[in-house]
Image 1: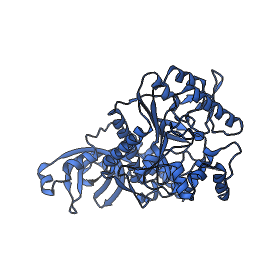
Image 2 (image 1 turned 90 degrees about the horizontal axis):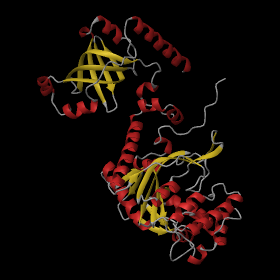
Image 3 (image 1 turned 180 degrees about the vertical axis):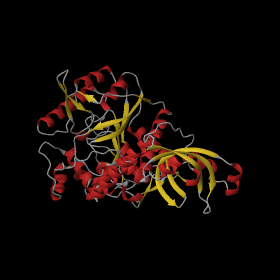
Length: 497
């Protein structure tokens, strides 16, 4: 197979040399198409053969050759641009001698530009009758499997350019991703949110419980971290007077790779002053209903054969209640970390000595409850221990005013009423620092600059983060995060000896 491919590539290089010798430029940039294929289809797909003949409509398009059929003097070519495909008809008798020769040099994968009149074939297919063409780009590498699609997922992710050409569904997913981001911006800006940018390089990695990537700035001779969240800087903007602010940006976590995790990912974070986590639950429902209606025109969609129902209101349940119901524990037993640790030990999970009731409850939830949640569900009242930036619940200081939105067993959104008490925040940071000293690499360091910002005064605020990649997975029926990220991180291929 490799030998055959190498032979084809060698033949293509020879064609390029012959094309140049004949006086043609194999990488011409002089043709400017006047229409996209989708624009042509939108205007003329509904016209009959007779109506097209009477209209004598001339069009100009450019794109990649996806099909070449030589039938004697007649040539049918399938052409694809960014918007769709259309058939071309060329009769060699209508071409000059140079173009007759050049036509024989074309291969699937080449880019050409054509101008001609629209008509319908005997089978009724809308076709452009062209009496000339311009070679724009000569393709050297052959496309896979004669357009039956590139199937090997590892090759698909490593050769995304080829994947996009061979698998139109992939392009549709990325177009849907772009649409989702655009709609999110529209939704927030219609509600008076302002989009601002925060640093990717940070001197302290904060805003989430995660292990960061570390780099070094030579001029300043300091270590820097790629941000694990935009949270602490966005909240500084709230302190400064931006009552409604958001950012859609890349975040980085030095963690494992799976179908739901990529070390580099896209996060939406937004903050709303004079609001609490209950307000954000309503806002999150509104956002998802808006996206479902815009993209699918329905609140019920399918994901990997399962039906998901986004009809509001979404189910709401406290984390303790969810764990208690699943494990058959009383309210008192759920609050007993020894009871939970015993259950976890039976599942083969051992916690560190310094991990208390909060992390124990969280672990039990992630093992027993979360994987079984299918339809959108708000899990509320997280333990303080796993929520160092969240406001304590007024009635129960063991938990915070926080929720996660779970769909198909995965966290899609995380939100809480923000902790704006600098004294409490300092104590939480110091507790995290002690956990960090005992080996918890995901614990927060003490961020004195952020505490100082809180001392200036932050109004009552609620904030939320939504993973754009996971949201796109749900809305495009994609089984892996690698399907919705154009260039996911992959292990380097072994070097060829």
